[in-house]
Length: 263
Image (tube, rainbow, N blue to C red; front, side):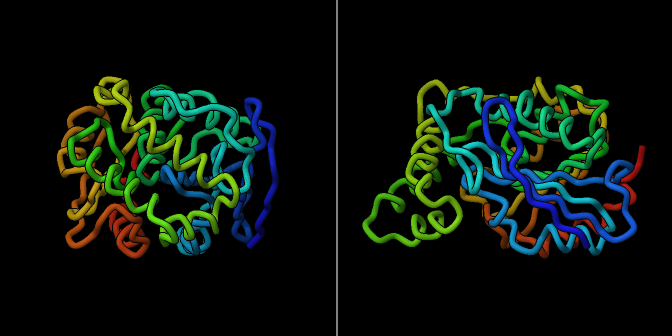
């Protein structure tokens, strides 16, 4: 398997990208799955999932650090309420064009899932399928409570959360966490809802969520299923929280392969 790491200039940012290309696969011909990390994630937080996807499913895999995350350039200004839209409408399309990815499968966790849905709604002909894990399409009371609790933990001296994030984001950690938590807890974000914007999606959507997710209820799955035009399969995973469960994700991908590959 070939692994290619590089920094690319995208929309004024230096974006760290990683491509995994299984032996015998032509990157220009696909198929390619693009991994979109969560709000505090990075290329490194996916652990061995990219390798398993490439090996087990014979897919080219593209993953990258969004601005302010991981090895990409720092954020220059705080998030605005449309920060996920900017990723879906500006950064992701430019990155795909630069790397010659025409119609990928998108797989997003949390914020990354919302970005995948927004991209699919804006560019329905440019995506083969969308898989989300703990994506959000609206702000719920539990969302804000969960973020407040996370902020409380982060502010405690010597907390493990900050130490863990430092391993992935280094000296960008405090800024990233402040911008992420700040926009969600701002009054401007309380009415955030993307149901109408994802309605044009025609590609198959597999939406998963943990039954113990501390940031969202199963209503997120119902809203996704009710919003998009294309076929949707929803899965509520018992005993799973907001954190990505790679084993559950891979199991669901295997069982839904015919669905996700349907045209």
